[in-house]
Length: 114
Length: 113
Image 1: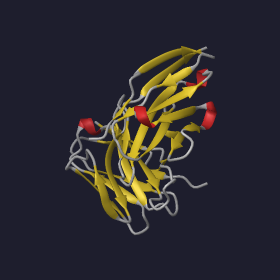
Image 2 (image 1 turned 45 degrees about the vertical axis):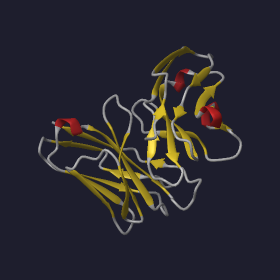
Image 3 (image 1 turned 30 degrees about the horizontal axis):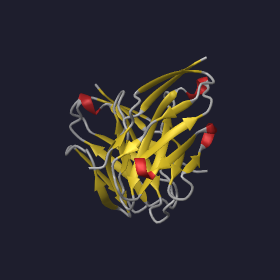
């Protein structure tokens, strides 16, 4: 069965550079969530989208932005990268109209800022 | 604000021991409850979930959890752990009709042979 696809798997950037992470949800899933998991930390909710509109916002820095496109894939854009942005970024998708639809997680993108 | 508490930060057990990991949440309304597991080097995987119905939920790999509404708890249990259960376990809550999945801080389980 198709899963949540994230690309790239690994990304190395330098301070002050920009990065774009992509998330492709499971087909027919209309909701995408982004999480950030720092080393040794629990996942922190960043932002979510439903039907291409931002639906909730968590602890996402102003340097980051995200959007969901017409095909429901989502991109997380990160600018002016800082060392502290090094983390595992994973997205999850679900089908909002189906109440029993659990979250399905991608494998994550590991971002290293040097 | 809603929150999820996992009181056991680090649990060390021998194989065949019984496991119970605590999870409490702070919200008086309807919630959906989850336990996720993260094996070393892997992404989060869903162990089990509770939406409604029987408060005793059975998940994969022999895990189960019991939703006790009066105690705002959703503790995870396994009668006999294995070395391969070594992982980090996250309890999570979605307040009904919201988007945000609120995670607990996680419990690191180490099982020794």
